[in-house]
Image (tube, rainbow, N blue to C red; front, side):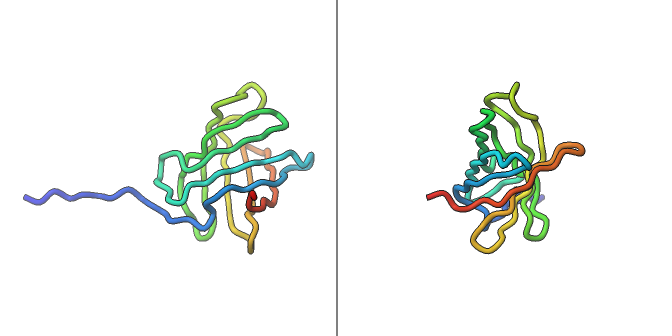
Length: 115
């Protein structure tokens, strides 16, 4: 008998790298790092929100078209920020569209490559 091996869902990503910018009505700073190769269900990057302060891991959920979906799990400053939001990323030219959502709350922003 042959064993069937199933490879994990891997997505090579155009959203990889370090990104910085602002999001939301209050224009709070956002810092992201996204890995080059993403594996579903595993950490695929990190988030930092310096003004709150809090930070976390981005758990890769799926790629839908040009949009990459992550579940954010805070690791620091959990008492300062909402935990387990959905983060969506999509390239927009040289920039990165950032969207964070939990329930009815939505924040969006445009991030640039960090230098």
